Image 1 (tube, rainbow, N blue to C red):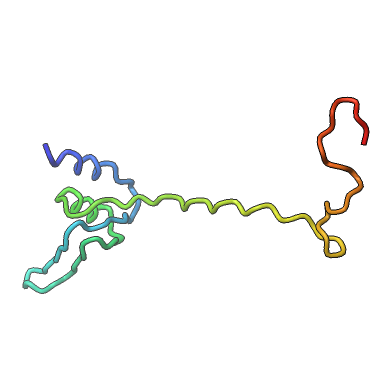
Image 2: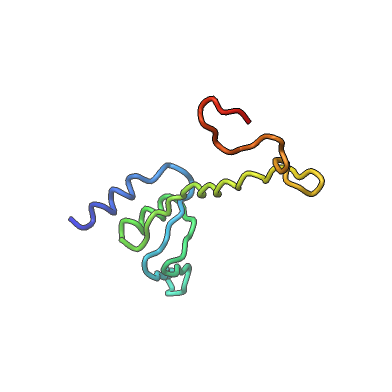
Length: 106
């Protein structure tokens, strides 16, 4: 029963020509003469053909790397009001900004 999630993951692979996978353990592929043909490091991400990725996922040696959209950067703060003669734009206005009682004039 432990293999079911891996088979489901392998079945969920898209039909793209290549798939990105992360190896969970180091693996070495040898040719018929025992020579190292290919090696994969644990934790490293590789782009493989769909068939090769499926093989490693079913064996439990790799997992699909799902690309997530990069997080949006935090919005920048609003710019300060423009200065006029070295003073902030709202400095020195004639209007009093204190709250007034109903019916009171400035």
